[in-house]
Image (cartoon, rainbow, N blue to C red; front, side, top):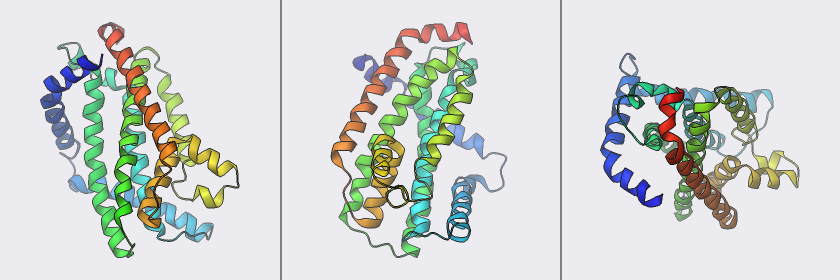
Length: 261
């Protein structure tokens, strides 16, 4: 299976790059602001969360805009990929019924689109870091292994959900509810360490991968601290397992997808 996956990547990576570029162009084709929407969307949500936290609840955290925005762009990357994966096959049925494309390639294409938007938002995050004079050091490099774990978890879970989304249409509604719940439990606009009493804060941080990854990124950016490598390694292993399960399901049943849709 791994050998087949590597072979597919070598063969279809040009298609992934071309399709991702086409999706990005078509998304902003009729928009006057073009790619600026990719910045304005998370930026507007950040301002809403800051207003709620600072004005309504009168709570603050050091470098709060950076705190919120860093968590928000991570959540956007994860949630958008997961939502899209459930209907990925049905959304691309015109392609699937005409030519053979490994179905997991569709996940990679969408992830590349969302990754580009994520990198654009990271540009704004850098601007916020400069504006609020966040002191940085070499510990910022810990962000990269954390994001690798995010990629693994996102890709593995997206592959599994894409498979079951072909056969169970209602799963889309279930995922939307679960993602909404997960968003509030991930500490996007509040600190789980400070606002959730012990021992529930540690349980929530270690048991919710997005909460853990957001906390690890913020610790590296704002506190110059290394992540908990044991927990990070566990979530990496879980992400790898999800990838293997998802690929196995897709390779086994992908020939029947066109018949179902």
